[in-house]
Length: 162
Image (tube, rainbow, N blue to C red; front, side, top):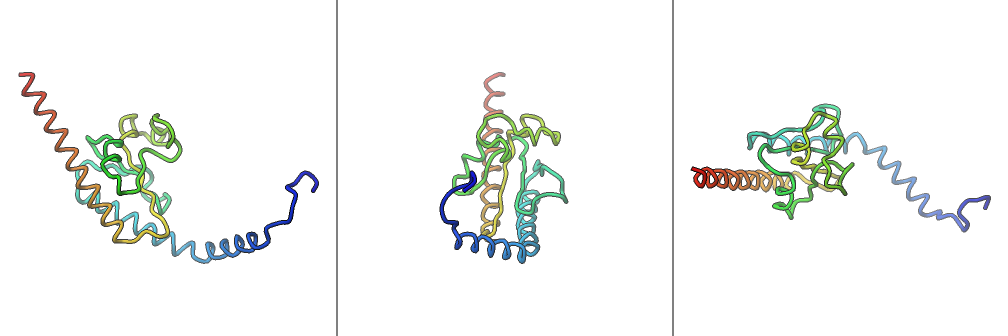
């Protein structure tokens, strides 16, 4: 065994992995274009429906299945909790297990508050246009609801103070 794992190699697994790599290579360009179109559809729906949407990252050189956005006046965690039916994450994958703002988002110039207020949408092989449209409607509705709640709290504080 010469220091390597003992036992018989998993030949069916090795062959299957090789075939999966071939399929990925054959479909990579078309799938990347499909994912980018879904990402751009989601981005356009959010930006077109709401004011104060910030798209984080390079507009051209980015992963086709990733959209990271922030919404002015909205805490990312509050929005995340308001969307239990949408698979979305706050911040970036690099710091998903911590409460610290993403160092990646800070490195591209976001403040700690902006980095903590971001949401990351991962779009994958099995996502459809209908799912993207539904996610956009849900996010837009919740952002509007949370902004209205925040505005109401501000008015109540002003009224209480004077």
